[in-house]
Amino acid sequence: MFENSIFKDLVKRYHENKLSHAFLLETNDFNKCYSDLLKFVKTINCEKEYKDDCDDKSCNLCELIDNNSLPSFIKIEPDGTQIKKIQIQEIIDRFQSMPIFSKYNIYVVNECEKMNTSSANSLLKFLEEPEDNILGFFITSNKMNVISTIRSRCQEYSLYYDIDVDNMLYGDLISNYLNNIYRNNEGILYNKVEAINYFKERSEWLEFFKEMILVFSLYIKGKHNNYNINLFNDLPLEKIIIVVDLIETILKYIQSNGNIELILDKFVLEMRNICE
Image 1 (cartoon, one colour):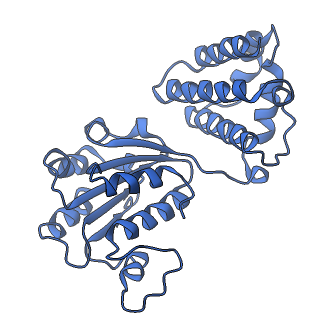
Image 2 (cartoon, one colour; image 1 turned 90 degrees about the horizontal axis):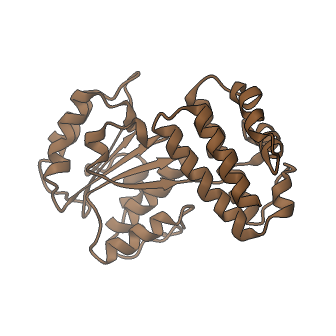
């Protein structure tokens, strides 16, 4: 049903009456995340029991959600380079009343990192004084870029989706990097002479390590990949999983604006400890 199991957990929380009122979803694939989110919205609003292949002609809830025409469901995206206050005001105005055709009033803010201070502040009432019938979902590719007043009031989840390794941007570079630092006493030197020149922008380093997690995830799931990474041949699965945890930690350092050269050196040193 869901491509990401986090939504299964949210359904479980819904049945236990433990749902939060606002969620910050960091993802590497907006389309798959939004597709899963729509299924979740259908599940918790269905008067019967939602199924992907439902053919109940007496209910048009799913069609209304898919067409973004359900009055109690609003999705907003950046208007140009920003999400503007007037867009947030639409949510506030429409959700003054109780939902009629569904259990919840639900709003989705896509690329929520593009809210400016004015638009974010307009949403604070929903977040600071939550009503039981209102749910909010904020979707971003980098939660560290989301305004702190929004982040601090949301339950955070990271949703990674598999991608076709043939279409990865940095697959060959990931393989080259890992093989050059793996069990290499000169790994720190490689960072300073070669790796540091891979990218100029922090956003590129973020994508690089996010794709690295995906390469490891595919390997752990036993799926074929085209990259000859030496440590996959040498390390047991439990150590591969520890490396994934390390990569996630490195991502957090990059997101928090840490010095890239120092972060790469930390990665090499920690990898050395894991691989010994």
